[in-house]
Length: 203
Image 1 (cartoon, rainbow, N blue to C red):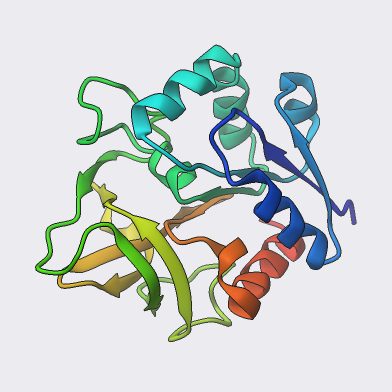
Image 2 (cartoon, helix red, strand yellow; image 1 turned 90 degrees about the vertical axis):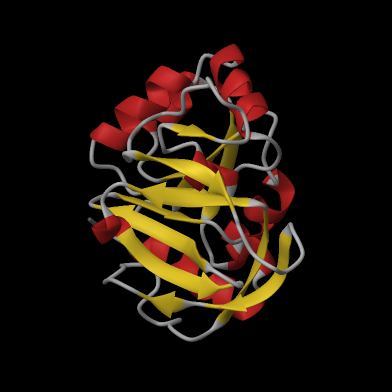
């Protein structure tokens, strides 16, 4: 099995931590912004930190939007992390008028809660649907840092939620594309289990 996992570098990801975590599970991370290397990848991670609009601008500046869409449609195992999940949707309240990648129908909205925003720290995963990455971690705690979350048109793609004064979408998935709002690379042994499942996953 090819152990290499390509981590897309577009100037907006927690690249060092993600790469270190991928190395810790015995995989071979390649951090790159080269469209040809991304196109040739067998498995892809799209990380993301920052504002939705800035990240989409960076993807376009690096000429990566087309190669990512092609990878999503090609059936390759694909994992979005944090803002990497949000970019897979059509748009976000954070930056109105900026189109996302649109792989999933729906938008990103601000979390409405009596609690502090951003939602930061450990929270418990509640599985909502079968997930190739989360079957071993139902009820476990993972690490979040975000103020916005996904509102998919198709609720059937929601694989896990957590409670933060409202039900917050923690992960989504369909076919070869899975995405998590939390940070597996910051979620200790639970996060490594999720990345290990991604390494071994063959859609």
